[in-house]
Structure formats: C-alpha cells, structure tokens
Image (cartoon, rainbow, N blue to C red; front, side, top):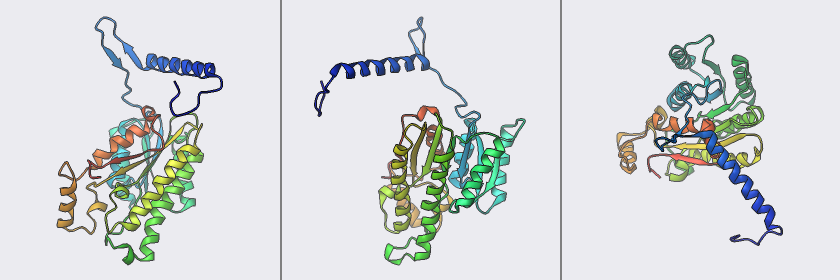
Length: 302
C-alpha cells in the first residue's frame, strides 16, 4: 500500500528495493548486537573510545563551554586542536591537562591561535591540525561566540556591535564550516558541529543581534547537510541555553539571572557538562543517522 502518492509504475522494483533495505538492516543488527542464546539477553557492543585516533578541532576551546567539550572529546579518544584568539595561557592549560591525563608517545592535544572570522587564519588552523597529527581532520566543533553584554534593544544596537557579533558568530561559523566541508575526511566519520543557541527559539528582548547571528547558522547547517550528500560527513547544530558560563553572566544582574532560573523547569542553570555529551555523541559514528538537525539542549527552557 502506497499512502499519499500514486502507485509506482513497476511495483516489483520497489518491493525488491524494500527487501534489499531490510536485508541491510538485519545485517547491521548482526554486526552491532551479540545475542546470548543461553540467557536470552541481548548485548549491544560498545566502544569505550569511539573517537580513538580521530582528529578534532574545537574553536574557542581555551575556556568556557569549548574547553569542556574539548576535554570530553579527549575522553572519547580524540586528538584535539585547542583553538584560542587571545589567551595562550588558558589554551596551554587545557592542552597540558589533556596531555597529562592521556600520556603517550606524542601529544594528544595541541594549541593553535586563530581568529575564526579571518579566512586566512581559519585555513592555517586546519593546516596546523593536519601537520600536528599527520592525519586528515575528522571533526569540527565551532564553539567560538560572542554577545553584547549590554543587552540592547534592536533599535539601540550599534552597527559596530552588530558587525562584531555577526563577524564571530556567523562569519566565523561559515568560514570554519566551509573549510571543514572541503577538508574533513570523506567516506564516513566526518562531523561538522556548530554551536548555536536556544535563544533562537526563546526570542528574548535584548538578544536581537545575537539570536539573528545564531539563526543564520542554523539555516546554513540544514542546507549544508544536504549539500554534503554522499561525502560521509554529517552537519548538525547544538543549541545550548542557558548555561552557566562567563559569557552568560556577563552584564547580568542577580535579578536577571534569577529570572532565567525561574523559567527553567529544572530550576537551575545548565552546565557545560550538560552539553558536552551531546556534542560527543554527534562526533561519533553512532550519530550517523542524525544529520541537518538543530538539537536544543536547554532543560526545557524553550
């Protein structure tokens, strides 16, 4: 039975296609599930290091949410490029922490200074990653972002602040995603993950430029996922909020913070640790069927 469309000209062809897909699905189950005939239990095979030997670039990872995401990807086995724009001290601290925790013949994490809004520096970032690990890049996580801590109405937003926000949040995401689309490993395992914001859905006053800058990358990622058809690269957005980071607290009074907490069903702010596992999942092979999606990680805030 074909619902909502005309019957195919040659139904037998479609039946055959269905049969082939079912066989593939059953074979996939055999590859991933080990059945215990004596106990009747089913065990799902798991890999404790699903990102082992894979190279990941995490922009804006010297502090805040980016730092926690980078550390989590290292726990999953990835080799990390810690990107920063100003504080080499903070970036070095993150890399040292990872390399100390996971010692080996070569470093698991390196630091690279690059302004994501500059195309030449974005190219250098990817070049440095390939040179440092002698490998293709598998994962891009773009977490670099800024907002206006004055929280002005759109009518009061200066052109300078508007341009700064779009330069980092939108132009930076575009440049990094574009470079990744051309340079990530083909044939499976390539992952483009852009951090958006749940403010795109919340649409709170005072976040006009910021929400618009993030809405742009959500549209872009949905289109990019389709354009990468056949490449073995997925493209998704993770949209956190509200998360207790320096950027969240910037310019907010205690009353403003409390209002946000009161709007959260969990009656608390989120932590970067609430977001990192979602990014980690999207970086692994287990997320292959998740593509072109906006995943809002906000505890029910919106």
